[in-house]
Length: 99
Image 1 (cartoon, rainbow, N blue to C red):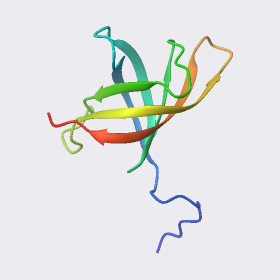
Image 2 (cartoon, helix red, strand yellow; image 1 turned 90 degrees about the vertical axis):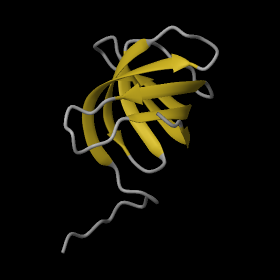
Image 3 (cartoon, rainbow, N blue to C red; image 1 turned 180 degrees about the horizontal axis):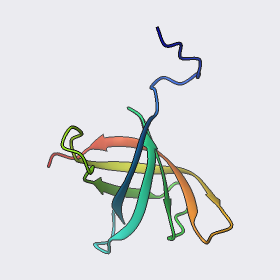
């Protein structure tokens, strides 16, 4: 039996797939790479700076047929930069949009 020791409400799943996102007040699409997600949150990388507190709409189509596409509304919680000109974004999923 696997033992899960992380103190989170939902287990994080590795996603490693391309995604798009847009600010809810704009139609302009931006590109990101989803690293992992859970039932309540998402972690992704992008070259676009997003301020904490911003609302975005994310969309991704997993590369396998097992996982369903996701279109959701997310509140950005944390942003950190790395040394490659990309930003790491942690967000809280606030709602799932019907596709």
